[in-house]
Length: 227
Ligand code: 5GP
Image (tube, rainbow, N blue to C red; front, top):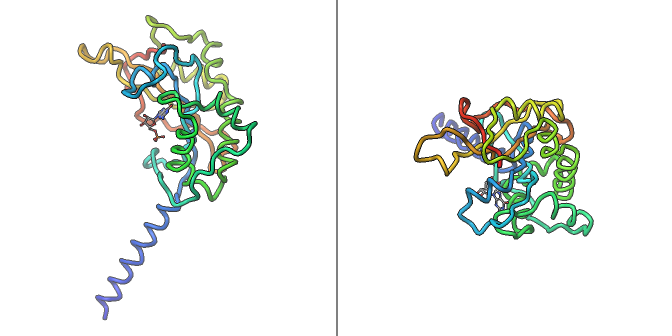
């Protein structure tokens, strides 16, 4: 009797955990912007190699947890309905293009299904895309870097804190950065790394910006190339 009640409790707890995970429990948002030239350089897909955009564009708005900042994902929520408003659609085409494959709608669909579904209890589909556009429009990362004389250069490099300080001056909060090894240098060891993404963090309601935790997105003692 005792054994079967215990088994029932364990099972109920496991179901409860699965339910929580599938509805998406998160603590804050990561608003991730990518630097298209780096995305294209690293992609095996037919990126817009000829002349990638020279401004930061949206990768996604990701509900996150401090213990595992890339989770939750692929939650039980409504499937992507498309961007119905023509006005929002044209804004997203500028702010949130698919720089890897050129299929914007598919990119938005993938981001909603993987990430947006996990915060649907707080912001619905329309709000998810509207808030992302507003975040992008309000904080111009390309301009913030330019104001600190950090502009694309094939030769110059910067430290992690050079880039973070420039963005912090503009946004008054600490961003985090994501880098990738420079493929041009992989054989001779990572003397430099490429800036891939800038992450701004927002509270649970996606309204107020907060400091990001420094995650292991870049090597600490390796200079960063931005070009
Ligand atoms: P996540 O799937 O968690 O949003 O991000 C990781 C994936 O996003 C990677 O597989 C990367 O290739 C993809 N990704 C990054 N930028 C773009 C883009 O502009 N377009 C598409 N289609 N995928 C992208």
